[in-house]
Length: 335
Ligand code: TF8
Image 1 (cartoon, protein in one colour):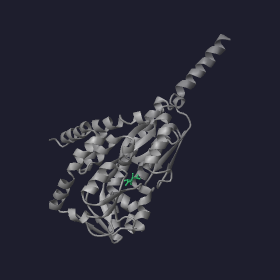
Image 2 (cartoon, protein in one colour; image 1 turned 120 degrees about the horizontal axis):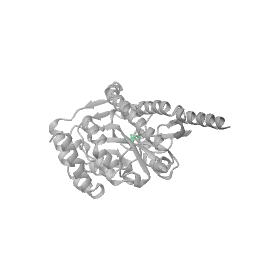
Image 3 (cartoon, helix red, strand yellow; image 1 turned 30 degrees about the horizontal axis):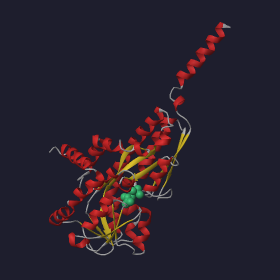
Image 4 (cartoon, protein in one colour; image 1 turned 180 degrees about the vertical axis):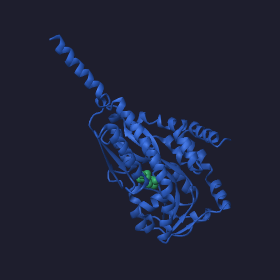
């Protein structure tokens, strides 16, 4: 009898030693909402994340991505996360100022000047500082991915200097900083969810919109626009948000898988976005659009015109947050 117990105990012990990882991983289904089309670089990031999850969970998790705002726009999806009715969203930070106004810091015009700065800022202390604001809104930011530098497209004329913005009906994201920026530039700025932009451009309800080349390409805006100006007026990040009420039901190991696999997705997504950007620009040109750069002189004038947005934005963003980002950027730039 004694020998039998010892044997079965040893067998049980061996079993628990043999599959330590599985014990903490449950069967799960994760839905990811997205506003972009599947051929956007976010699609590559999600694929990489899926592969990572599959390996780490031994296939216990199913990940279903929903494209082109089919589960709602960025803000609606984030609200679903907060109430625990949706697991995940790849969202621009910009429309989320309705939830956390400090996120408007990323929308300040000409804040970030290149991708290396963006990566250092978002993956460093400042990114952590911003992510730490999210749990109080029932959201967990797992990673920052890249939306990218935004450029203006329109159906009226090449935008080459400050005067060219005048009276142009520009769709902006639902975001006070972008609204202020484009009003200050003299445009007739209209906040609108991303999912409505194509139709609004097509029907002529608006003349213009602004997004990175990969989005102008993969959302087919080139079909309903004639001019693109290389304005690079803002770099907007994506947050990879997870529902905190759902996150809290995950084991520590499962939570770590989410962090690790969205980080794996980040690497692929950024690389893909950066290499696709050139191809997208070429496709935009091939579609017959006129693409123009802006002279240094005109750019200096544009920058000066919108400088006041920083001070006015401090009310909603917080002066301390703006000071913090500027200090961090100065460090990154070695100033
Ligand atoms: C915008 C954003 C969007 C993205 C996308 C829905 O213009 O740049 O394109 O957030 O994921 O609204």
